[in-house]
Amino acid sequence: MQRQNGDMTEDRSLELPADEMNRLVDLAMQRIVGHIESLPVLPASDAEAAEDLARSVMESLPRTGQAFEDLLGQLFEKYIPKSFLTPGPGYLAYIPGGGLFHAALADLISGSINRYVGVWAAAPALAQIEVTVLRWLCEIVGYSSGSGGVLTTGSSIANWSAVVTARRSLLPEDFLAGTIYTSDQTHHSVQKAAMLAGFPERNVRSIETDARFRIKPSALRAAIAADSQPFLVVSNAGTTSTGAVDDLAAIADIAGEHGLWHHVDGAYGGCFM
Image (cartoon, rainbow, N blue to C red):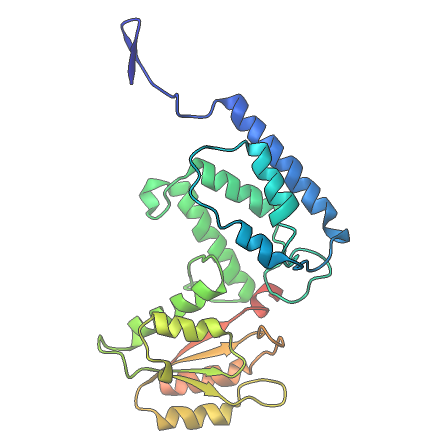
């Protein structure tokens, strides 16, 4: 606060004025729109001399600022092109694609208004939007009215939250004997999730798959019978490598018989649904 003509007025000298905010957004949008419009003609991958470029970014701490226009030029003309073009029509390797422009706008709005939605009382309507969207997703998949969940930044965090939820629901505080079952096609994030949740690597069992890369129910039954504290089965609704879908009904029956938590990694299947 500062005093001016005897009155206390707010000091906003560190805030960007409205015209400058508009200018920065306009400059960024020119680059973004141009990039998106050029996707059909760009190569699916451009990694030539990328290592040298990456090393050139290893610089000392800057002591002065740089013009926004110059930063945009570096990003869109030098750094961004040297990568896999995941949003391009010719790129088929990874699940994360180009995303939606609408979602990018939503991120801009969310980051700018910066509302806290960790508790309902802090922003009731905004928190309710998340709950409502989750309800829609449950309806799309066909879950019952009592189902729910949380939105995560990606499937790796989703798998980790599932492992922790299953651990807290089914295992005692001393949980190190708990055993997790996956297939040899399951994404490596499940193994990482188990380690982050505190389990030894040896507690994650890789179950044999058939000719269509699906978990063999008979092999799963045998593995469960051989362990002292089985608690979680992770099946796949579209594996990352091949798009294989496990026999979810059969695995669910086995999990139900033994009182295990059944988590389905919907890497491709969830998107298709």
